[in-house]
Amino acid sequence: MSGYRPLVLKFYSDISLGDPLGGCCITPNGYALLLTKLLGFAQGRIVMALEGGYNLRSIANSVCACAKVLLGDKFTFNTPEMQPFESTWRVIQAVRNELKTCWPVLSSKLPENVSLRIKPAPSELYASDSESDSEDVDELLGTVASVSVIEATGVAISEHLSKMKLDDDSLAVKTNSSCSAAEQHPVDSVKVHNNASVVLTKKISDLSLEWRSDLSKTDVWYASFGSNMWRPRFLCYIQGGKAEGMNIPCCGSRDTSSPKGTVWKTVPHRLLFGRSSTPCWGTGGVAFLNPEINYNEKSYVCMYKITLEQFNDILFQENRLVLEDGKDGNTVYPDSPLIGSSEIKFISTNRAVHLEPIKDSWYSNVLYLGNEDEVPILTMTCPASDIERYKSGELRLAPPSETYAATLIKGLVEGKQMDADGAASYINAAAARAL
Image 1: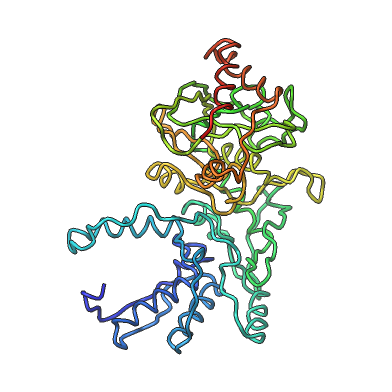
Image 2: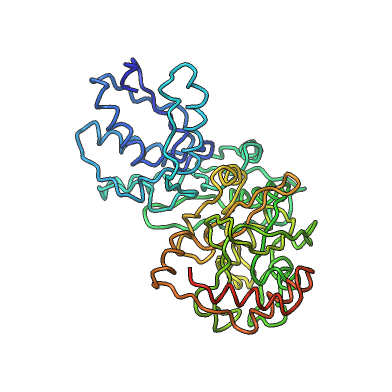
């Protein structure tokens, strides 16, 4: 950028973290880093203008961070916070592609192995060093509602904003007699997390229902390589309950519709069994796919055609994110999806995405296995870093329990992929091989 000798540099507040209409999720530290770099060649020609932005807290935090840079404060940028969000990286790539015909320097390729974040962690919002500043912000929070950072389409947000009105000192949502029971009796969807709280009026939590409506219109193939190859066990994740051999029941998905189709195929990924026990299957390893492609490997997967909403509910359950007994004895699901439409586009290009909010969970890595009838094939497995930990011995490879292995065998046999002896040999061979 320094070669273009810009006359004016403008910051846009509606791309900041916490803004309901922004998609880039720029953190206050991100703005501070950008401004620090711009100061190197701007030679004093810095204009900081508040352009757009609908969340006073995110605007205040971003402006405060930039003002401190202009006043000479030195920021320390921690490595995790320096990882760009996937949405930011995607926008950068799109802009470079559009402008490269005008400025050939933008034709150079960006780094490919960049660690990206999908959802912002609450602690990334800027914290004031001043106790009085904190009190001032708290006072603002009594009158201003901000929208949680969730995956929602522009249509959903536009529809929701159209229902909003300013009512004296607070933000309210218009209601009418035709609204559903859920809309008439909403529940709080976001809790306060220290100084990084996201404040919601209760009715704004209806946005958590809007992402479900959105994602229910998108189909994906969920590829199972473990116990879910057996259809009765898979349906526990959809309809709830437990199948033969399971120690604990599943809560099921919000949408209990059966899959629209089932297809078997093989994929060039290594099947392995790791960890030492689970609450559902007891002592023994459970199945994972090595995320790395290896065309010398062949693993069987049973693919179920389901909605992206259902895929998220399975992902929630696999990673134990569903509270099976909430305050009122109801099942409580997370308020926002882990995989939305934008993540599908990212995964189809990058082959995988490690979900930062659940990075330490066993099945936090979503793999893209291609398309079937122009519908994306997704599965969930361990991150590549866990494979290295298995190789080093830090994590334990372990054969499956008899009950768990029997479930996989039933899936392969009833799916007509092989007979019982062949299925047992397939599983035993995968469990016995070193990585």
